[in-house]
Image (tube, rainbow over all chains, first blue to last red; front, side):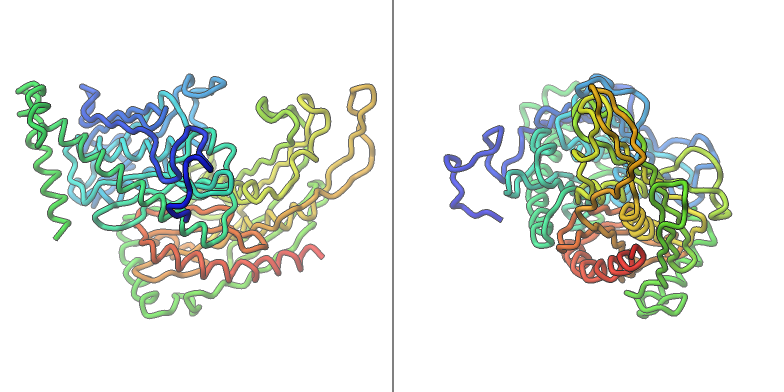
Length: 269
Length: 268
C-alpha cells in the first residue's frame, strides 16, 4: 500500500481525494414512517433509502422456516437512478446483489429468535454513483437496528480498488468504470468477520489482500457514522439534538434500542 | 439446497464432524478434487462446446456466436454473455421455471471471471462500429448436479471458448456481407475459478452437493495464467476472517494451474 510519501500534488484522484479518503457520507435513521425500521444514506452522490419490515408473518407461508426467521433482501434501482434510464424490472445484477446483501447481513441477525417469521429488507437506489451495494448494506444494517431487531453486530461495507495503477478507497462511479479492479467488502467490526467479499478486475494476490485491508480501514470509519446515526435518532449522548426529537417518538423508540444494544452487548462478552 | 430442514441438520452434524477430522464423506482429503474430465468440441451445431464431468457433476457448455447491435456506451465492442440453465433433469430438487438465485450467481460469477480477465478482444468482435457486432453467448447446461458448479462451468467455458469459431463478415459499401470463412476466437487469457467451502472451521475444495448444502460459506477466486486474481465471490452467510481469506487465496492459487492444464489438454 502506498505510504505517506504520496503527496496530493504528485498524484490525486479524479475528485481530489487522498487514496485512503472516503467520499462524504451521511446516514439518517428512521426516515420512513410506515416501515418498522429505515435508513437513508448518502455516500458520495449515491442516494439510497432502505426500509425494514418485520419480524412479521411470512408470506407465502411455505417459505417460512420452522426454526429461524428468514431474512429477505430486495435491492432495486430506480429507473432514473442512472444514465440512460433503466428498466424498473429487476435485472440479474439486482438479483445477485440482493443475494449477496442477504449473505452479508444474515449472520449479524439473531434469526433464531423469530422462528417462522420473515424480516424484509427493501433497498431502493434513488441515485447511483458507484459502490451502491456497499452503501445499501450500510443503510440496511442501520435500518435493521432501527427496527429493533436484535443484532450480534452492525454490518458495515466499503469498497477499495485499483485506479490508475494505485490502490484507492471507496471508488466513485468514474473510478469504478475506468479502474482496474473493484473489491467491495462487508465487515462485522466487533466479531471481526468479513461477510461480503467480491472482486472484479485484475490484481495480484498481494494487491488483493492489501485491497481488502484498505477496504476494512474504510469500514471502520463508516462504522462510526452508522453509530452516530443511531445515537442521533434515539437521542443518546449529543444533548442538543436529543431535544429536537419529538417526545413521543423518543419514548416509542426507547424499547427497541435497548433490545438491540443489549443484543450487541451480549455478543461482546 | 433447502437449508434448515431437519434432515440437513443431521447431515450437517455428520459432515461437519467428518470434515473437522480432516477427511470427507466420500473418502477424499480436504483439498482433493474429484476426477475432472473435460471433452471439448463434441457438439457440431454450436460454434464451441465442452463437456465437464467433476465426479457426478455433469455440465455441458455451448458457445453460440451471433450478431446484434452493440451497447450504446460501447459502440465498437462485441458482447460476451453467460447464462446458466438448471435443467430439472439435473436434480430431484430442481424444478422448471425462471432462473433462481443460484443459477444467476453461477452465470454471473463465471461471466465476471471471463470478462475481468478480458479473455476476448471485444474490439475484434466489432463488424460495423455502432451498428453490428458479434455477440458471444456462453450457455451452461447442468445435466447432473453434485456440487461445485462454478468450478466446473468455469473450466468448461474456457474449453468451449478456445474451440469456438466465428464467421467472418466483410464490409462492402458499408453493408455487412457474410462470407463462408470461419476463424477461431482470439483467446487472450485463461481464467480458471477455484472455490473453497468452509464447513465447521475447515476449508475444503470441490464440495459435493451434500457438502454445499451444509456449507457455512464459500469463497470463489478466479485466476488467470499469470496467477493474478480476476474475480472473487463470497457466498453463504458465515463471515470470514482476514487470515482465512489470505489462506484461501494462496491455496486456491496453487490449484488453478492443475485445472487449467486439464482444460488445455482437452482442446488439443
